[in-house]
Amino acid sequence: MICLVLTIFANIFQTAWTGVNERTFVAVKPDGVHRRLVGEIIRRFERKGFHLVGLKLVQASESLLKAHYWELRDKPFFNGLIRYMSSGPVVAMVWQGLDVVKTARRMLGETNPADSLPGTIRGDYCLEVGRNVIHGSDSVESAQREISLWFQNQELTCWEDSSQHWIYE
Ligand code: DAT
Ligand code: MG
Image 1: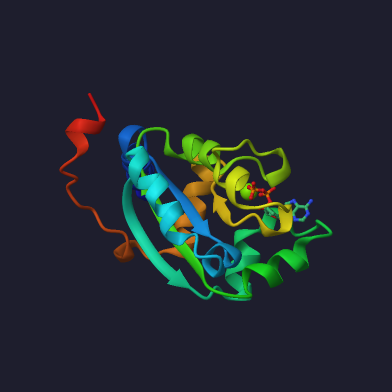
Image 2: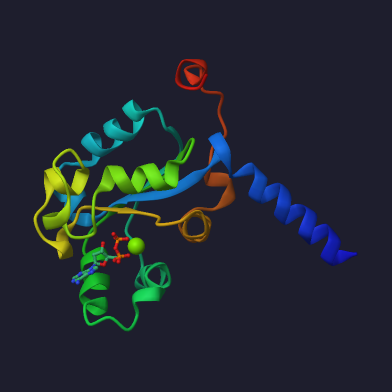
């Protein structure tokens, strides 16, 4: 019985995060904050038509960052990555909209700015992989994991977007 309830709940939860309600986790990294890129980055997501549901300035703890980048724990750059990410505040955000995970990654550009096309955030505003100004979830599953790591449920705001009818047919 408990299993059934959990399955139904999980399904409702998943359904709620698909289609126009898909969500992703985006963070302006400390270099982006220091370099005054926060407004520019938010502007790009707003103008694209995505819907902001969570936003905060965070001095991330080492444990949060280690959990966030757990998959990279064996990489030689891991310790440097954690030092960089904890060196200053991060602007953590949750954006919502159709295909937001994939589209946000395309807006970010490639992991290495040198491979990122002009017009992407990393293509326009940075040069080195170790200072690539922004994070974006790489799949719907990562987005769910990262959103729950960085945000409490009550920090996410559901609000009616008056421009929805002009963005979706
Ligand atoms: P992404 O941020 O594009 O999802 P990732 O998840 O593979 O890329 O790596 C996370 C971050 O780690 C990345 O934004 C910058 C850093 N990083 C990745 N590869 C690196 C490398 N070869 N040298 C230094 N830092 C690296
Ligand atoms: Mg990644």
